[in-house]
Length: 127
Image 1 (tube, rainbow, N blue to C red):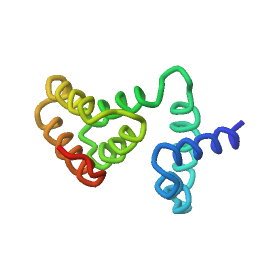
Image 2: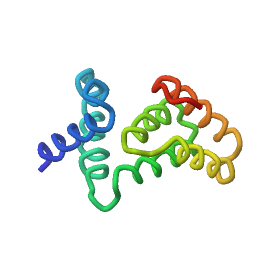
Image 3: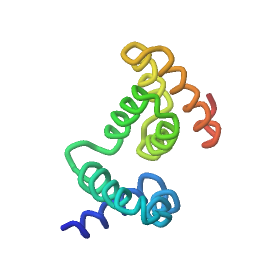
């Protein structure tokens, strides 16, 4: 089951982040990080993102909300790209950020908006 779940997780990583980014962490794992990357691939992506109870679009919105609350800028940017891939709109992202402003604080929303602007610029999405 573990190999099956790893393979499923790797496929989901490819679908969410693109083939290169989806495989990079696993491919570039060292002796020190290999077990961590295998667990992330198997558990986070295979077992959780692979569940059918929530559509990926909604999972992306939830994930963004939690990352904004934690002020995790690199992960916010990564998951903003994924959210766009999963059909989350620019307007929905703005609403997530406005909601975060209320529940997570203005600084968290400021960082989230900054990340969104960078990702939108990279993706050629006009503000």
